Length: 362
Image 1 (tube, rainbow, N blue to C red):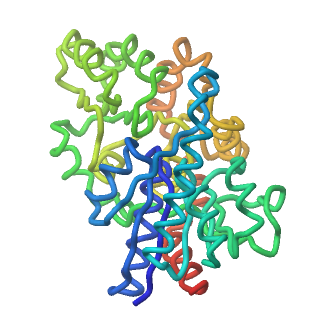
Image 2 (cartoon, rainbow, N blue to C red):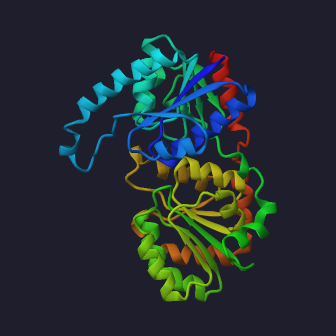
Image 3 (cartoon, rainbow, N blue to C red):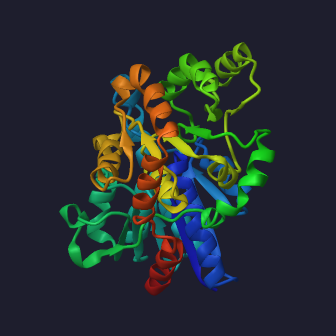
């Protein structure tokens, strides 16, 4: 029986591609044995079991750039995680390992390398992170989502696959009636606002002050807030009467959310970008400015240069985002142009292609 370790997590942008790869591996080899490794206390410890896979947590954490004193325990956590990772690899005896980014990828892929287990890296962004650049030397294959990644990785190891996304997003166009019924909405034009799995404060505060303006213009809204902002969002919705807004801290049925949407406001994480390419939705991107190496801005600019998306900078969002959203919702020609161009960037078979590369390592 083939055994695969998949490591990474921390955010939905790492977790859901990892699950998509695991599902594709199962399709290719139904009896495959897959073990996930994540970071203790992070969201993968909940989301991965929900998807039907076992997961083990490491006591690893990232570097806190805002509070340097919080990093005093980092060396100890790293040493403990490396020891635990080595023990896991010895115990599970995988035929290959996969790293999708996130805190746990480093220790597991290093342990795999030390113990002679071949590994593959999946880099989601247009600008490679420090961990993946460091791990690239020992990787057998590096699957990337954007062209031009030879600037970060050895050219002979790169395979341009795109980012893996959930299979239920492959065709959402036929789901619109079901989607509107699911969210309790009518047939009016709909704006979807998604700030990533943990929400986005800038997007939330922009919507909080502008929700009434959107509703007065005759539109309706699906608003995903994250846990920290949900109470404030509900108060803002209640103040408007709330009849044309669906608000939730987390949306599991993202296929239906995209199906309902005529336009989308989103951060520019790799997963969100890939999902929007696949669903062909016209979008306004508000990149997270504190993302490592400012990779979200680079992701968004890739689309802007292809006339496949609009960009509002985080610092300007509270003043400009609602106006930009209203402009996009009113402009049918711009919607069609952005939709056509963003679809050209979609790679719907990414998960299967990556799974095939993993099995080549075995």
